[in-house]
Image (cartoon, rainbow, N blue to C red; front, side, top):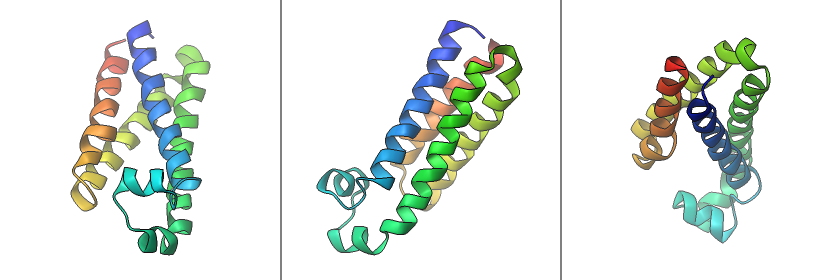
Length: 118
């Protein structure tokens, strides 16, 4: 895989690690509430659900990193995880916030295209 594709995949993985931290550990803090535009009451009531969602983001990051570490043998894993990122980003943009399209789906799509061309 070419270096630009690897860097793009690592960037997407980093985004998902950051989302994991926000959702699992900072959800009900001022930083987490600001990132997702939630109230203290909502954050408190949905903390367990957010942590679950954060875990899934962590799985995506882990899959991308694992795929890179496997070299050529990890190409299919990378492609699968990137497709999941894009689909989740589009779904999130439609159902939760249009911002997700730019924060999650667009970087995932760029990395996917670069990975397919590599």
